[in-house]
Each structure stands twice: as C-alpha cells, then as structure tokens.
Image 1 (cartoon, rainbow, N blue to C red):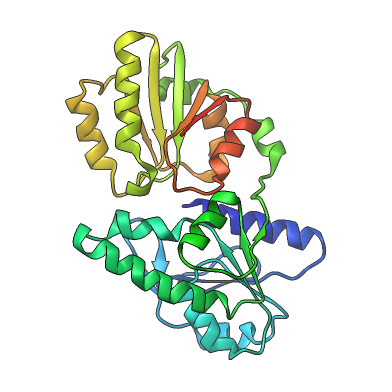
Image 2: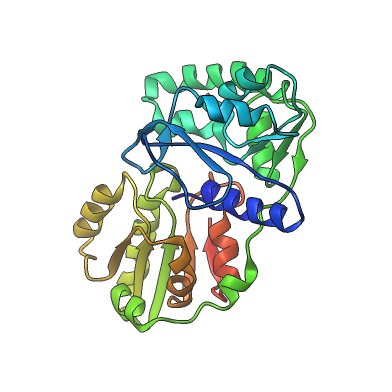
Length: 290
C-alpha cells in the first residue's frame, strides 16, 4: 500500500537471501495474521487510507524484539517511541528516513498550525536521532530534509533499490491498455493519491498538453484520500475521457500495468527517492519528473 511497505518487503527478502533472520513488527486489526514467515501483527486500528497503527506491541512482539540483534526503524514517531520503550537502550538502533518530514506540516496541518508543527519537529527529530546508532537517508534530498529539521549528526546515504527483473520482464497487457483508454501515447502515474504528491498540478499540466495534442491520455494507478477531489478536477477540466483512474492495484500486478503505458510522470517533490521512478525506468518507460 506504499513505497515504504514495498521497501521493507524487498529488504527483508534480500537480507534473508544473504542468510539473516528478519522479523517485521507491525500492526493490523485484531486477529490479523500474515502468510509470510516472521511478520508479527500487534492489534491496532485500520485507517481509511489502508494503514494500521497501534499504541502498543503485543506481549509476544515485545518478547521477540528483545531477541533481535539489531532494530531497523522506519517511522521515527509513534513506532520509534514504542521501540525505544521496548529495548530500553540495550539494542543497536538504525533509522531510515523515508520522507521529507519537514514538509508534512505544510500538507497536513492548517496554515495557522504549520509553523508550530515545524517547531515541534525541530525539537523532536534531533533528539530522537541522537538515540540512533545510524541514520540512513535515501538521497541528498532526504539529507536536506533532515538538516532542515535540525538533525546535525552524520547521515548515511543508501539509495533505494528494486528487484529489476520483475519490472524488466513486465509484458504489455491489452486489458490494462484498454482501461487506460487506448490513447496513441499513454502517460502513467503510479502511487498514492495523496496531497503530498502534488497531483492537482499534474492534472493541470496534462490539461495544457491535451489541449495541444489529441493523441495523449493519462492514467493514475493507485488509491488515496484525494481520489474524489481529483475526479472532480478532471470533470472541471473536461478531461474525464482522457484521464483514467485505475484504482488500487496489487503490487504483484504493477509490472504489467507499467509495461502497458508509454511515459511515466510524477510531480511530487517530497518523495526523496521513489521506488516508482526506478520501477518505471526498469520497465523501459522514460520518466518525466518535477
């Protein structure tokens, strides 16, 4: 349901291939279990966007956490605090910063509170990072975000990676091409339909292109809280026949979805090293990015 989810699945598989034991501690609705080996769910609440969160790990999860040799944290806020309490300073801790935390107050807080949110972030994040043995960033943009959040300790850049073969072997699928609209030149965005992706800008940019070129179409593969707003925007732009909303797509199906398009587009400046760009390039699509 997100790049971070896919990243964790990929890094788990790769570390296991190298002979390590990897356990994922996460949250789900009560009674949820996983078919995957060593994925432990603690009871939580499912949010509308598909994520689950919880306020505490299960007794079993806390016991297993103490058996680990190293803990790799992927969210510094609620999850980070739960880990700090669980290990009480007795385990090596690594944080990967997956996003530009410094921009989230702009996107998700009312304008009057965004300055307060940034001040809180600059108070919290440096203190949390000082508890880590290593802090990983995926790109120079990620480093810039951490520095803007007043994190001053050394930061290691480790670029994101994907399983190239899955995307290189994607085969164009006539059904997906039909769902996109069968335009001679098909543009594609993949990812969540969320405010930080700057998708209204993408639709406006496509409208300018479509006015000059009758042979282009745009498809958006993914779901999210902005879907209704974006559909209404497409209607206002009189582009409902040119812009296809494919909805959420299973990650296993995405290689053939991407292979069925011609050009990949992304307007977010807040994704620091998005997997979707690498995936599209591996599938042979030229990427057009902001």
